[in-house]
Amino acid sequence: MTLFKKTATELQSLLHNREVSVKELTAESLNRIAQMDGQVQAFLSTNEDQALAKAEELDKLPMDGRGSLFGLPIGLKDNIVTKGIVTTAASKMLEEFVPVYDATVVDKINEAGMVTIGKLNMDEFAMGSTTERSAFKTTHNPWNLDYVPGGSSGGSAAAVAAGEVPFALGSDTGGSVRQPAAFCGVVGMKPTYGRVSRSGLVAFASSLDQIGPITRNVEDNALLLSAIAGLDPKDSSTSPQAVPDFRAALTGDIKGLKIGVPAEYLGEGVSAEAKNAVMEALKVLESLGAEWEEVSLPHSKYASPVYYVISSSEASSNLARFDGIRYGYRAEGVQNLEELYARSRSEAFGDEVKKRILFGMYSLGAAHHEDLYVKSQKVRTLIAQDFANLFEKYDVIIGPSSATTAYKIGEKLEDPLTLYANDILTVPINLAGVPAISVPCGFSNGLPLGLQIIGKHYDEATLYKVAHAYEQATDFHTQTPVIWEGK
Amino acid sequence: MTQLTIDEVKRHAGLARIAMTDAEAGMFAEQLEDMIGFSNKLQEVDTEQIAPMTHPLPLYNVLRKDIATDALDREKMLKSVKDHEDGQIKVPTIL
Image (cartoon, rainbow over all chains, first blue to last red; front, side):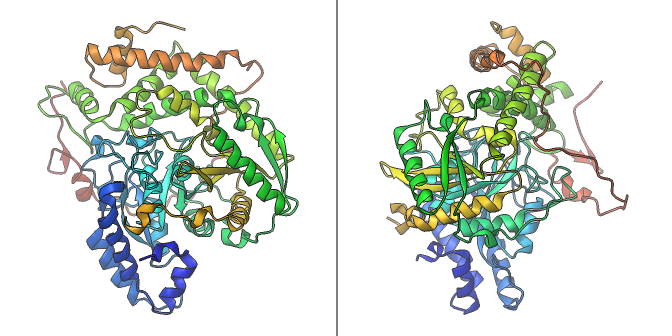
């Protein structure tokens, strides 16, 4: 079947005309997972009985009052807590953890009448960019199963790309929604910091984390962000700014739009195919009436070290809560409390997580606090100022979402510094707290490339407008991997 | 900046409450050296007059009325606790 090639709006009209029921949509998603996930390995768990039961209940509700996402299936990255459903953050630490409450975004998707199909694989505690750092399984890129889906929200992007679910939520601390969206040829949005509640998101780096939607097209993405965004009393960093109906921004009219293209985003380390795809995309945007100029984000080259110091420091503090006492993994056969802490954490955290905790401890320790942590915070100020300066003159900033297409599985496992350096295109956005979206913009050797559009604080509407205009003028988003047809 | 010794890595692991063998500490010493080397690039930036950024957005305190709401259910929370008795969490001897 090809139901999930349709947009949310098209599926909604099928539901209204009783050509399909919520239960059938739910079953379609579960069937596709049964058929394909043996190869893709996107899901850590599925929620079959609860999902079908909920779908039956939803089918009984009157057509009037159903919203634009009613009855549609969604998968959630497994660091978003779900009441009564195991939430692991892909760590042995939380292998058996059953949350007692729902994340705010889960409350909101429930209010919208969406059906949660299951929980999606990721790098452990979202620390990674290939999803190979999951404690449980490696997710494969649906476009070529020998390649990674990106990460850390690799399960979310792969599940949408394989047509297992039309919607997924991921989280983005340094590119973890946009880079896997690019690698898997789908649309991923990292909203403005404070736009979406982090209540119920397993914390990695609290000044950077944001939950964001992953979908097959821009309109669906806009609908999902409208549904999950907004002020939340449970997250004091959420903004009181009104949440617009982002779909209303999809006018197709980008005449006079001013685009800045940072030289640093097309410089050293960025592959020729990624550069070419961006240049081609700029031609398309020009043909739609936009204007672009080369600009500079002079502190970009420092963004990766700043990001690793700050995110590891915050993680070392956030992950202190995993002590083996109140929830999570507990070591056995210990003699005293100190040994319980140390052995539980040693046995249940993976090496990447331990490394980042250690680097965070080192950066925060008295000996290096000034030259690492505080220095990084100061350079962060400069990085944020770079963006603020450009946004005085330009409406959006455009570059690639990733320096290359997806890596081969195993290729970068022993080469963390190259992976960290590749983050230069995505981490500055989190450091500045601005929103950015990745949309499909081409292929190289059968693997997708992503165009990154970066905007002003709280101006996701403009990002959606530009992304939609570009999408409608191209056909990359209509293409599906071979595996989609079950081959 | 520094040559990290196994003892230094183990001291930080101790502070982080992560048990670690000498072999593991040796592996992490190398990896941390790489990350420290990678971060040393920051020293070339002049930040003399720059204030540190602690948060991406200006935040201010907001007060709300102190109204009691439903708390989480203790029985359900205890389901995630490995060892408990009479509604209390059991831990090994502390003293």
